[in-house]
Image (cartoon, rainbow, N blue to C red):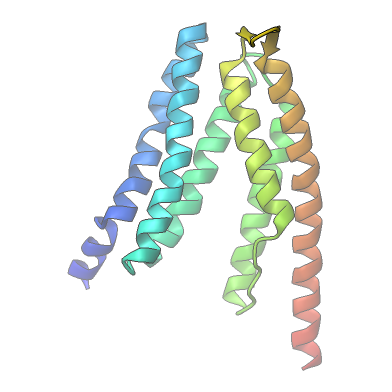
Length: 199
């Protein structure tokens, strides 16, 4: 039993996932420095973590390494890095506290709801709105981490790109998808419970 658990923990996909968790303090250290270079490095590390999220799932499916440990660690890593960066950016003035509170409350609530559904034998698949929420949220957080305005030169045009403003708008969009997808989760959970009671 112990050997099986050890093999699960130390297979390639789970090692990648654990490295994503381990990198969180490093991201926060660079983000705390708040300078343009440090902010950019923090954003690059977060982006690297997002890319690794794709690879650990791909390896787990391709080589049949899907495990209970992986099912626990993968969503945990995603939520930890989002929560950590959002909370870190509140005192830095890069995001308002109420937005952070709403987003984190949504994540905790839906995680709890899905846990209850799982124990009751109910399957709650991820919705498209939830996937859109994740995409907008990730890019929005990356932009807020970069924060500063950079001038981008095109062939006949020079544009001042304000990463902070763009990041805020993307977070607002992700907030709308967050609330909408949460409403869908509650609706699907209620319907599933009622169908089971009727049966």
